[in-house]
Image (cartoon, rainbow, N blue to C red):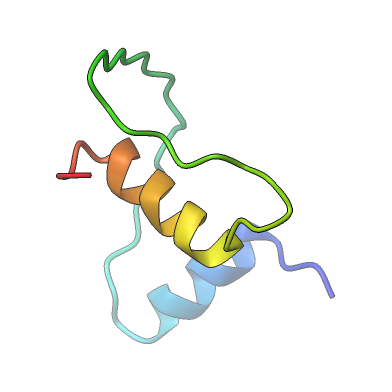
Length: 61
């Protein structure tokens, strides 16, 4: 089942939460001394996605 983002916003708004529209934005970052996990058949997908999330917010990887 697909949910429309405006339906989700309406649900939170009806329960007293402040809701605001956010736009996607593109950012470009280069890291030159960063160990990147290899994606092979032995790769743990959850650990890779966790690494990617930490990297994307500028965390300590």
